[in-house]
Figure (cartoon, rainbow, N blue to C red):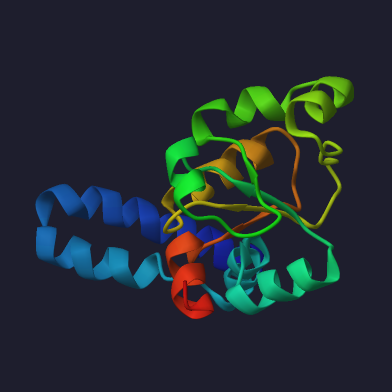
Length: 158
């Protein structure tokens, strides 16, 4: 495993050196060396909640679902049981004390070890950024719903 990671790092350095000189060769080599290995797919899959996973979590009541879209988007249509925390205020909100979070959002605050935290937006871009923020703050088991509200509405017939 270590040799694979070292060789991958070496290849990425070669790509960076070659990119400036040999655009076509660098492009091909970069595409080859940056494709996800099998063990990397598990990490990606662990950070993404699918439609069916989210549906199951919602039906069992075992989800802390945060909609990181703007309030007007949230009001126009939302996934039931989601709590709106716009992306711009997410970091500040996740840093609130338990009491402040409870008062502001009328729910218990998420715990850093909780495995049922899911962020969503409209199409996955903002929720991916939300995931990065949450992970940086120590919410290491949080996920995002990559399909977002647009996929949800389509599959739910809304």
